[in-house]
Length: 203
Image (cartoon, rainbow, N blue to C red):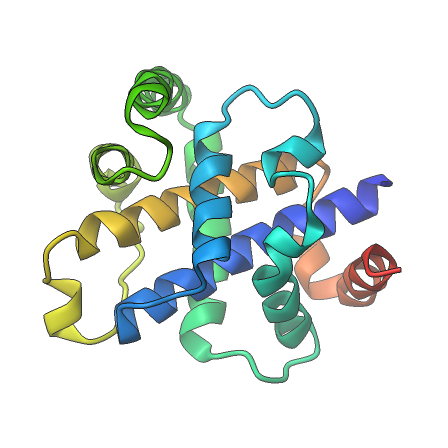
């Protein structure tokens, strides 16, 4: 896999998070494989390989790949999903410029990793802890992501931490995208290159 393909996959992870957040907020349900891939990627703070971050199966990011394709071609992309996706990248840039928050995030994710080893990666306690990390760190920036959806769902038990956990996952993939050389201007000027990379992944 070349660098362009890694960039495209990491960006697909960002838009997978954006789609999962939108689905949870509107319907209370989402693609479980997509959600679980995001949570596992967030907990894997020291991956052995790039591929291990998303479980080595490109189809674990299929929802994000399809969403990103829609964004790049300006088809079938919900305005909320687009807003969340680009907002996650903005939030990642704020985080990169805040060394103290980066180290706090690293320390707390290491602690939750221990919790996940005990309870299992997808346990409610682990999701609650990940959501708490997002609330205590990224949501303290003046720039915040406002999630829109069904108010009764968004206020229901366990839903706020689920949404925050997936937003944290989106920032994790945005950081990965940046580490692979992804830049915001490429989203504007390099759309065709990203599309080519996505298409080559499917062959």
